[in-house]
Length: 280
Length: 129
Image 1 (cartoon, chains in turn orange, brown):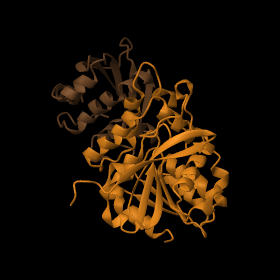
Image 2 (tube, rainbow over the protein chains, first blue to last red; image 1 turned 90 degrees about the horizontal axis):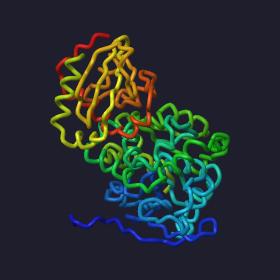
Image 3 (cartoon, chains in turn purple, blue; image 1 turned 120 degrees about the vertical axis):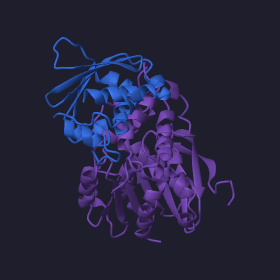
Image 4 (cartoon, rainbow over the protein chains, first blue to last red; image 1 turned 30 degrees about the vertical axis):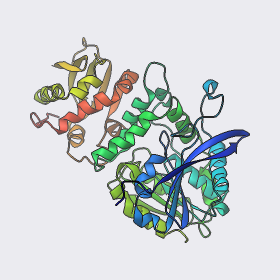
């Protein structure tokens, strides 16, 4: 086996709301395109285990990108005087711009947490651009059970506090090394970025009335949720699935909120099963 | 239960990384288990005193109010969902955090890892609820 990962990383330049963004993306595999969205406060690295999985990539071309402000995608020019606050509209625009720029033909969209939330928004509003949706730790809406302003303060390290908080969402079954790799990404996220992501995730309720519009006859929706996820509980995910006619939902007993990152071996069979539910 | 906190304090001393994480943490924390109260005083990350309450004269920075059964469930090697984290206990309605929660959040990794030391220390597990 080669010591070099099969994952290839490149940059693509897109225009979002009239501003130029150089976006980092990675891909591995060939065949059906599967666009993967990371969680709040993290980046593409969350998907590395599946991208390095030869069985998954034999027939699936996995592509993941870092949202602006995240990972290796820089914030836009002038960010130093801006308050980063993600919105549903900006997130949708970004995903559609990447699909177009990378010339992805009706990819499967797989998103986790806020990525799962936006996957369901795209299922409702732009279903024709995708072939199916795997929404992981995804729900209609969650008000914050914490104060999002904790994570952006001049007197404390938002990343370290964010990591300490989200550790609540990691299953005790997760291997210790992957637990800490998962938390490291939160520790690394830029000042105010986790807060800005959470602003979108915890304040925008617009998905709720849109869920019944999703046409799972054309684009299937499969929701995956970990038992140890305190943020999006199995009850939250099931409620969301129940509101989408034809959607399916699987509870993953030993997993938490970052399954592909915190416990790759545990998540793998659930993701392969989800891919099998998507059109080829 | 007093023995348990003492054992956890000893375990804390054996973990250099935790003492480093807690080096700015000098506070008294109230742990309430049903009717029982324990005031845990930390000095620069070291647990220097554990005083049983109740006491109206002991100031504390933040309090974790839960019950003995919930804490025992939290201390299992593989806790059930909800019992696996302090905020999990809060979310499932088995605990409450009062007081200066921001001080807790600023020192969250330290406090969570201190509390989790109860999973590694077996002495004094007999809790009087």
